[in-house]
Length: 120
Image 1 (cartoon, rainbow, N blue to C red):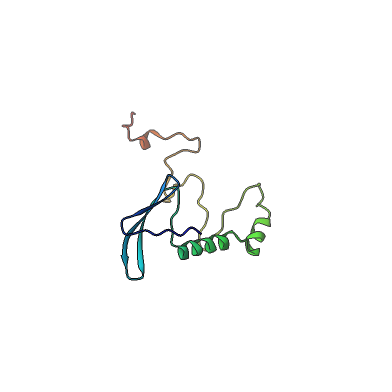
Image 2 (image 1 turned 60 degrees about the horizontal axis):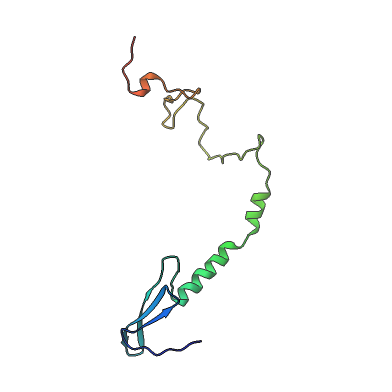
């Protein structure tokens, strides 16, 4: 460990990009100002340790996740949407609001839905 002595308003350089400045000294506390590129994270050590522990916890695989991945996909080769009690699938041709869809199954939009005047 390199130990340096600095007074208030004096700076330490780390490489070409990081500056550490002694901003204030009060009793047994020293306030430091750190200037570093945004690509470099700067944290107090206790915060860094908490982030590191949380990342390690999130990276662990639990048995329930493995079992869910092992299940075979639904017939047809794709994943089946989960069923919610009390809800029925919407019949084709109905929009999300329950009324008729403005887009036909062929993908074309009827003239009335385009906002133009209809000609007879």
